[in-house]
Length: 245
Image (cartoon, one colour):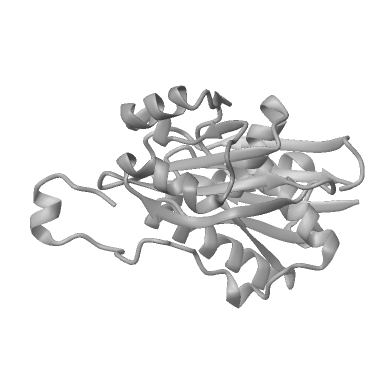
Protein backbone atom coordinates (compact mmCIF):
# COMPACT_ATOMS: atom_id res chain seq x y z
CA UNK A 1 0.00 0.00 0.00
CA UNK A 2 1.20 3.48 -0.88
CA UNK A 3 0.54 6.43 1.44
CA UNK A 4 0.74 9.86 -0.14
CA UNK A 5 0.01 13.44 0.64
CA UNK A 6 -0.79 15.51 -2.44
CA UNK A 7 -0.94 19.31 -2.62
CA UNK A 8 -2.75 21.31 -5.29
CA UNK A 9 -2.56 25.12 -5.30
CA UNK A 10 -2.23 26.03 -8.99
CA UNK A 11 -5.56 27.92 -8.98
CA UNK A 12 -7.77 29.76 -6.51
CA UNK A 13 -9.38 26.41 -5.64
CA UNK A 14 -6.57 24.87 -3.62
CA UNK A 15 -6.86 21.42 -2.06
CA UNK A 16 -4.88 18.59 -0.52
CA UNK A 17 -5.42 14.85 -0.37
CA UNK A 18 -4.37 12.05 1.96
CA UNK A 19 -4.30 8.98 -0.29
CA UNK A 20 -3.71 5.34 0.60
CA UNK A 21 -4.01 2.55 -1.90
CA UNK A 22 -2.52 0.30 -4.54
CA UNK A 23 -2.02 1.57 -8.08
CA UNK A 24 -3.22 -1.77 -9.47
CA UNK A 25 -6.53 -1.58 -7.61
CA UNK A 26 -9.53 0.65 -8.22
CA UNK A 27 -10.11 0.91 -4.47
CA UNK A 28 -8.24 3.54 -2.48
CA UNK A 29 -8.75 5.41 0.76
CA UNK A 30 -9.06 9.03 -0.37
CA UNK A 31 -9.50 12.03 1.91
CA UNK A 32 -9.62 15.34 0.03
CA UNK A 33 -10.01 18.78 1.61
CA UNK A 34 -10.61 22.00 -0.31
CA UNK A 35 -9.12 25.20 1.07
CA UNK A 36 -11.55 27.97 2.11
CA UNK A 37 -12.37 30.29 -0.80
CA UNK A 38 -10.89 33.79 -1.03
CA UNK A 39 -8.22 33.06 1.58
CA UNK A 40 -4.49 32.71 0.83
CA UNK A 41 -3.37 29.10 0.54
CA UNK A 42 -0.27 29.97 2.56
CA UNK A 43 -2.50 30.77 5.58
CA UNK A 44 -4.99 27.91 5.39
CA UNK A 45 -3.24 24.87 3.91
CA UNK A 46 -0.91 23.83 6.72
CA UNK A 47 -3.37 24.26 9.66
CA UNK A 48 -6.02 22.23 7.80
CA UNK A 49 -3.48 19.56 6.89
CA UNK A 50 -2.39 19.19 10.52
CA UNK A 51 -6.03 18.65 11.52
CA UNK A 52 -6.56 16.00 8.85
CA UNK A 53 -3.40 14.10 9.74
CA UNK A 54 -4.40 14.09 13.40
CA UNK A 55 -7.95 12.89 12.66
CA UNK A 56 -6.66 10.01 10.58
CA UNK A 57 -3.89 9.13 13.00
CA UNK A 58 -1.21 9.72 10.37
CA UNK A 59 2.12 11.41 10.83
CA UNK A 60 4.34 12.86 8.12
CA UNK A 61 6.73 9.96 8.75
CA UNK A 62 3.96 7.54 7.71
CA UNK A 63 3.95 8.95 4.19
CA UNK A 64 5.84 7.30 1.36
CA UNK A 65 6.12 10.58 -0.56
CA UNK A 66 4.65 14.05 -0.99
CA UNK A 67 3.15 14.83 -4.40
CA UNK A 68 2.68 18.46 -5.40
CA UNK A 69 1.25 20.36 -8.34
CA UNK A 70 4.34 21.73 -10.06
CA UNK A 71 2.34 23.94 -12.44
CA UNK A 72 1.73 25.78 -14.57
CA UNK A 73 -0.64 27.98 -12.62
CA UNK A 74 -0.72 30.90 -10.18
CA UNK A 75 2.83 31.87 -9.28
CA UNK A 76 2.13 32.39 -5.58
CA UNK A 77 0.08 29.21 -5.29
CA UNK A 78 2.74 27.08 -6.98
CA UNK A 79 5.41 28.40 -4.63
CA UNK A 80 3.25 27.53 -1.61
CA UNK A 81 2.75 23.95 -2.79
CA UNK A 82 6.40 23.40 -3.71
CA UNK A 83 7.71 24.95 -0.49
CA UNK A 84 5.35 22.93 1.73
CA UNK A 85 6.14 19.70 -0.13
CA UNK A 86 9.83 20.43 0.20
CA UNK A 87 9.61 21.21 3.91
CA UNK A 88 7.56 18.14 4.79
CA UNK A 89 9.77 15.87 2.69
CA UNK A 90 12.97 17.21 4.21
CA UNK A 91 11.55 16.78 7.71
CA UNK A 92 10.48 13.18 7.09
CA UNK A 93 13.30 12.06 4.81
CA UNK A 94 10.80 11.18 2.06
CA UNK A 95 10.88 12.02 -1.67
CA UNK A 96 8.67 14.46 -3.54
CA UNK A 97 6.79 13.93 -6.80
CA UNK A 98 6.02 16.84 -9.10
CA UNK A 99 2.82 16.56 -11.16
CA UNK A 100 1.80 18.86 -14.00
CA UNK A 101 -1.43 20.73 -13.27
CA UNK A 102 -2.60 20.18 -16.85
CA UNK A 103 -2.04 16.43 -16.55
CA UNK A 104 -4.07 16.46 -13.33
CA UNK A 105 -6.88 18.10 -15.29
CA UNK A 106 -6.70 15.31 -17.87
CA UNK A 107 -6.87 12.67 -15.12
CA UNK A 108 -9.93 14.33 -13.57
CA UNK A 109 -11.58 14.54 -16.99
CA UNK A 110 -11.00 10.81 -17.51
CA UNK A 111 -12.48 10.02 -14.10
CA UNK A 112 -15.50 12.19 -14.89
CA UNK A 113 -16.30 11.16 -18.49
CA UNK A 114 -13.90 8.29 -19.39
CA UNK A 115 -12.19 9.98 -22.34
CA UNK A 116 -8.82 9.09 -23.87
CA UNK A 117 -7.73 12.33 -25.56
CA UNK A 118 -8.07 15.53 -23.54
CA UNK A 119 -7.27 19.15 -24.30
CA UNK A 120 -6.48 21.00 -21.05
CA UNK A 121 -6.78 24.79 -20.85
CA UNK A 122 -6.06 26.80 -17.70
CA UNK A 123 -6.60 30.54 -17.56
CA UNK A 124 -3.13 32.13 -17.39
CA UNK A 125 -4.61 35.64 -17.03
CA UNK A 126 -3.23 38.56 -19.05
CA UNK A 127 -5.47 37.22 -21.88
CA UNK A 128 -3.49 34.01 -22.25
CA UNK A 129 -4.05 30.30 -21.60
CA UNK A 130 -1.82 27.53 -20.27
CA UNK A 131 -2.48 24.65 -22.64
CA UNK A 132 -1.48 21.02 -23.15
CA UNK A 133 -2.90 17.96 -24.92
CA UNK A 134 -2.93 14.40 -23.62
CA UNK A 135 -3.65 10.84 -24.69
CA UNK A 136 -4.25 8.12 -22.12
CA UNK A 137 -2.25 4.92 -22.58
CA UNK A 138 -3.35 1.40 -21.68
CA UNK A 139 -1.38 1.44 -18.42
CA UNK A 140 -3.21 4.56 -17.24
CA UNK A 141 -0.35 7.00 -17.84
CA UNK A 142 -0.77 10.11 -19.98
CA UNK A 143 1.25 10.71 -23.12
CA UNK A 144 1.72 14.46 -23.77
CA UNK A 145 0.69 15.16 -27.35
CA UNK A 146 1.60 18.79 -26.70
CA UNK A 147 3.77 19.96 -23.80
CA UNK A 148 2.60 22.78 -21.53
CA UNK A 149 2.68 26.09 -23.36
CA UNK A 150 1.11 29.55 -23.49
CA UNK A 151 -1.48 30.31 -26.16
CA UNK A 152 -3.71 33.26 -26.99
CA UNK A 153 -7.47 32.54 -26.89
CA UNK A 154 -7.72 33.27 -30.62
CA UNK A 155 -5.00 30.80 -31.59
CA UNK A 156 -6.73 27.51 -30.83
CA UNK A 157 -6.54 26.22 -34.40
CA UNK A 158 -2.76 26.64 -34.42
CA UNK A 159 -2.54 24.98 -31.00
CA UNK A 160 -4.36 21.84 -32.13
CA UNK A 161 -2.44 21.76 -35.41
CA UNK A 162 0.77 21.58 -33.37
CA UNK A 163 -0.39 18.32 -31.76
CA UNK A 164 -0.67 16.49 -35.06
CA UNK A 165 -4.00 15.07 -33.89
CA UNK A 166 -7.21 15.59 -35.83
CA UNK A 167 -9.61 15.50 -32.90
CA UNK A 168 -9.93 15.31 -29.14
CA UNK A 169 -12.59 13.69 -26.99
CA UNK A 170 -13.01 16.38 -24.35
CA UNK A 171 -11.75 19.63 -22.94
CA UNK A 172 -11.12 20.73 -19.33
CA UNK A 173 -9.93 23.80 -17.48
CA UNK A 174 -10.73 27.27 -16.17
CA UNK A 175 -10.20 28.88 -19.58
CA UNK A 176 -13.71 27.71 -20.44
CA UNK A 177 -15.06 30.03 -17.75
CA UNK A 178 -13.05 33.05 -18.89
CA UNK A 179 -12.91 33.09 -22.68
CA UNK A 180 -16.20 32.90 -24.66
CA UNK A 181 -14.25 32.57 -27.91
CA UNK A 182 -12.65 29.37 -26.61
CA UNK A 183 -16.06 27.96 -25.67
CA UNK A 184 -17.34 28.81 -29.18
CA UNK A 185 -14.28 27.15 -30.71
CA UNK A 186 -14.85 23.98 -28.65
CA UNK A 187 -18.52 23.94 -29.62
CA UNK A 188 -17.58 24.29 -33.27
CA UNK A 189 -15.29 21.29 -32.97
CA UNK A 190 -17.93 19.36 -31.01
CA UNK A 191 -15.49 18.93 -28.15
CA UNK A 192 -17.17 17.48 -25.09
CA UNK A 193 -17.03 19.70 -22.02
CA UNK A 194 -15.86 17.42 -19.20
CA UNK A 195 -17.14 20.00 -16.68
CA UNK A 196 -13.74 19.75 -14.95
CA UNK A 197 -12.36 23.21 -14.33
CA UNK A 198 -9.60 23.25 -11.70
CA UNK A 199 -6.92 20.65 -10.95
CA UNK A 200 -7.78 18.43 -8.02
CA UNK A 201 -5.51 17.07 -5.27
CA UNK A 202 -7.02 13.59 -5.61
CA UNK A 203 -5.94 13.46 -9.26
CA UNK A 204 -2.48 14.69 -8.26
CA UNK A 205 -2.37 11.83 -5.73
CA UNK A 206 -3.33 9.19 -8.30
CA UNK A 207 -0.69 10.42 -10.74
CA UNK A 208 1.82 10.68 -7.92
CA UNK A 209 1.13 7.10 -6.78
CA UNK A 210 1.76 5.79 -10.30
CA UNK A 211 5.05 7.66 -10.46
CA UNK A 212 6.06 6.42 -7.01
CA UNK A 213 5.38 2.82 -8.04
CA UNK A 214 7.68 3.33 -11.05
CA UNK A 215 10.38 4.87 -8.87
CA UNK A 216 9.92 8.23 -10.59
CA UNK A 217 10.54 10.49 -7.58
CA UNK A 218 12.55 13.61 -6.79
CA UNK A 219 14.88 14.74 -4.06
CA UNK A 220 13.10 17.44 -1.98
CA UNK A 221 15.64 20.00 -3.21
CA UNK A 222 14.22 19.50 -6.71
CA UNK A 223 10.71 20.65 -5.75
CA UNK A 224 10.66 23.59 -8.15
CA UNK A 225 7.54 25.07 -9.79
CA UNK A 226 7.18 25.06 -13.57
CA UNK A 227 5.92 28.50 -14.50
CA UNK A 228 5.87 28.28 -18.35
CA UNK A 229 5.46 32.06 -18.42
CA UNK A 230 8.80 33.67 -17.62
CA UNK A 231 7.40 36.75 -15.95
CA UNK A 232 6.95 36.36 -12.21
CA UNK A 233 6.08 39.96 -11.31
CA UNK A 234 4.19 42.96 -12.63
CA UNK A 235 5.46 46.49 -12.99
CA UNK A 236 4.04 49.17 -10.69
CA UNK A 237 2.03 50.59 -13.59
CA UNK A 238 0.56 47.17 -14.40
CA UNK A 239 -0.44 46.60 -10.78
CA UNK A 240 -2.01 50.05 -10.64
CA UNK A 241 -4.01 49.15 -13.75
CA UNK A 242 -5.39 46.09 -11.95
CA UNK A 243 -3.46 43.43 -13.84
CA UNK A 244 -2.58 40.19 -12.08
CA UNK A 245 -0.38 37.21 -12.92
